[in-house]
Image 1 (tube, helix red, strand yellow):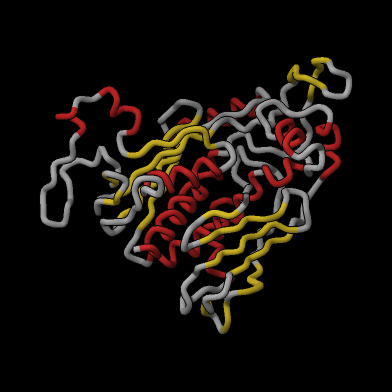
Image 2 (cartoon, helix red, strand yellow; image 1 turned 135 degrees about the vertical axis):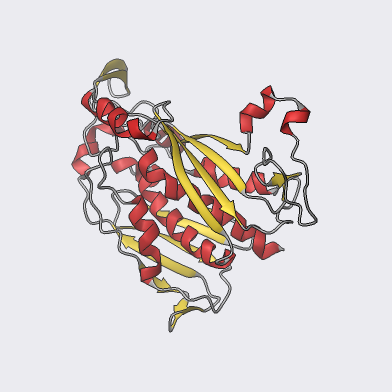
Length: 326
């Protein structure tokens, strides 16, 4: 299914090389000021253009088609759509029989019996995250100005030295390869008490959405996997006041699946872009042999550069859904 959420329900639709992509959000409270201009800042963070991103340029101009009247949400489903204006579908003509390694081509063909749209990855494309970022903007409006997000890339290609990020990306590009990275999102000002254990805990919902983002292969909160190498005396977060603030934040702002009023800290591991220009040896379904594949098309050397705002949006959507349940 392409819908997620309990009170803040998000439905994504479209394909990378189809006519449009878009999002419909049900459960948006009435009376929230929303205009098409409100989306621009976050859409710009996702847009290509920086070194290491795809040369495919799209205007990504949002068109609100329902749910807003005279500048305010009506309480009806909010729908925003985007035109795909710069497609080169011929670059993907061979993928129906010669699927790309570590991409969704082969599994989509099997699941949908060959009826899937292979152009640019179809509905499996990172292009669909445009709609997720759009929903994130609305989610942040619901959370209010008291919740502040700070999102940054903390690693690229296994290196945490930000001054070397450009060098690492350029080296991968010259070798017709790609690199991954780690994105950290912090949400300050989230009220204590959000989360519905067991299965709708704050961590469960945030992780659910993050793992729905193409290329995300790992999620951790607070100290994350490092906690497994710590003792309880090191990992425990002593409470220092009546508001529940803690001296440390190894829990990442969530205890027992419920937000505790401290900063929520979540990190997402983003894999290297699967579509690379380097020759690869992989199975060709047409003749039943392993053959050379050279992937055409326009792809990011480091999709992490454009994923930071997507990670932030996914976190905001989960928190908005929980806040509307409170």
